[in-house]
Length: 223
Image (cartoon, rainbow, N blue to C red):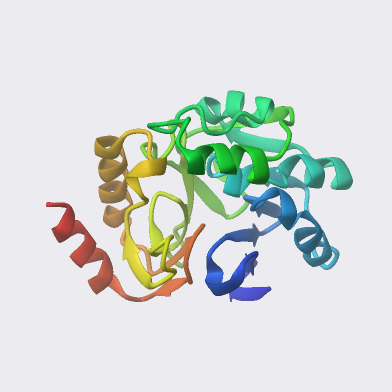
């Protein structure tokens, strides 16, 4: 576990930061794949967690959600548009091609069981010291979390900081193969850019600190 800032911890779940979850205040954000549960639960022994939130209900973010919520007796929170997938455990339905072999692999091997969503989150909601930012596109109801005091952004998969095939580090948009609406995703990236974040935490890739130049280059590539 890595301390990123005050009351913010990164928990890399696979090598090279290829899948991450985060502890912010008393909240667990995302939960990796199904096999991540034991690692997450070991880390949480040293933190008081009162709720679990998802940036979105894809298999590499909700995989351990049901197990963790049951084990700790905590509620699950998502956006309204992610609620049905999180509760059903059918998490590839809004992929461009749910029958793609990678989508089928993720559903079979990574996705966890569904779990009841106790609360839905929307733009402007306050979650501890963070504010919810709606960033749809990668998934239909993707949300991110932003803290104004130190301009720290939990981006989920609205942005990635590595090539998911090669694991080469670099700021980019999420792959089209797993993205519901590419135009909407680009609009969400622009929305996050306007927040002028100083620290960006990703579902995939290492934390990015004080490097506005990379974000500017990404915006330029998007046209």
